[in-house]
Length: 169
View 1 (cartoon, one colour):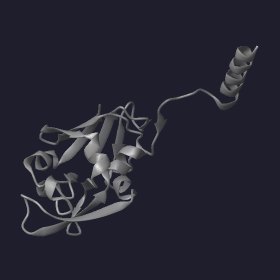
View 2 (cartoon, one colour):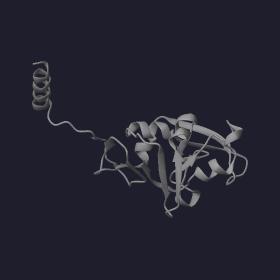
View 3 (tube, helix red, strand yellow):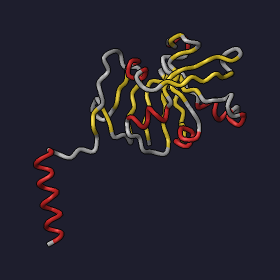
């Protein structure tokens, strides 16, 4: 009897609230898509992908990291959303992120990095938008100045620039 009641509640709820969907939709880009994500994500806005324009990335809380990199001179300031906030927004649930650049270069970023460190999706350098020429429009930046252990080739290699897509696995 208890099982029958549970099934009845489920079917009544289904008929009242519509179908049950695992994935829900995000707002669609209003401008040119600069970043897409797919794989183990819950929220999408184009098929099984989520696409983002610059305005959508700007709408997330922003973080500024002042760091010294192997590719710039002295300390510079990168700004953009935390990668963990971006992944939380799409409901990502995997162990790694396969990140791909405009030139098809691919790196694998462990999800532990995202949780342990304030890794950002930088869209600005010293207050100026990153262009493709400047390794943009999105550049993955680690907080190298905050943790000396990050200043090794492993983390520099994960700092992919001209990021165009990610697959959560």
